[in-house]
Image (cartoon, protein in one colour):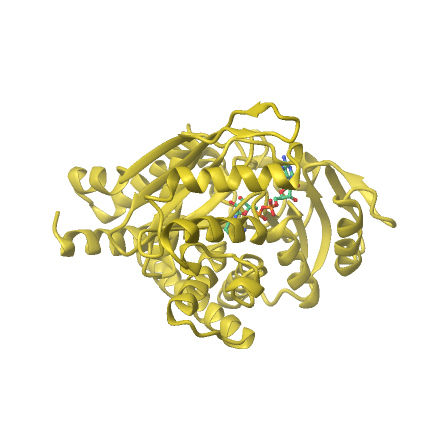
Length: 410
Ligand code: NAD
């Protein structure tokens, strides 16, 4: 299945429980707009670099469309379609006044100099500026894009449309970004896990063991916050490989090591572990926090964790999701677990529009409230319909988006 088909498979599974009509189903699945643009730039060598950029706007019934920009060789229209539709359901699960979008550029940014990356980003904005905007479509960081990239987007868009900090979120705090945004997705994932553990009689994070795939924004912040709360992170990995320690890794020291060396590999006092081994390590909670499609039919039977906390987008294929559920493994789904990022992006956007700033404790308290309230709704639907958390999340999201669509009129 393609990424978009996977999301639609989950959608249809929930739609069946809701008895949704075929016409409404088709209308909700169909994307609003798909854009593919040429983002050729002159490289430092003087040669022409040719790249393709994508932006998919999936649904706008509940507000401006919202979703990240990914710079990665795997970016294509299908990936953007799948991730954009996930954003529609995600913003609805945590009840934000947004629709869903996603995009990016098919590029390996590690091969570009900072100047080339800036030129590429500005060129992309030139190509899509007329379809994004503070009340239309608001990009944010995703894989291989960060606060600096968001600052370039804001600057380029503002040249064309006047000063517009609210056109993009995840900006540097010194440039109208929000306190707490950088760590929001990791923090939100930990809040999600805590709500589940409390409700399911599973105790607390303290003393539990974790394996985390991906040590970028989401994975490293999840690791830091789990470590602060007494969790034992036994293994982490990145695109270069992984490290493990049976006593638990010293996460603050590992963060310093990554700052120096740009990878978790070679962390003193740890043993190497491959990404494949990490996914099946004997831990309480497995946290995929890198790319999609990593828990598949091929390894789902080997997963030993009792809980999968989906910090990444679409890390579990539908067949793997079924296998895990059959085996009694609880999968806490991406469209709720990693919604902390878009939630604090919403706070950033609201601050930009009001030209007012919030303190970090208010941000974190409001994030906590959104994750807690979403859990209460999901848990009620899980019990009412006897479905998995993922199906419950889709039921809640489809209900909200469907009602907004019908109320607005077709
Ligand atoms: P990032 O670029 O900051 O980090 C990605 C990490 O994954 C890096 O450590 C990288 O080395 C690692 N990685 C890449 N390929 C890998 C591979 N094949 N095996 C193991 N590790 C690999 O990206 P991020 O923002 O942390 O995003 C991670 C995931 O979380 C993505 O699925 C993204 O869509 C999702 N997400 C991000 C946010 C956000 O706010 N940044 C919000 C919601 C969801």
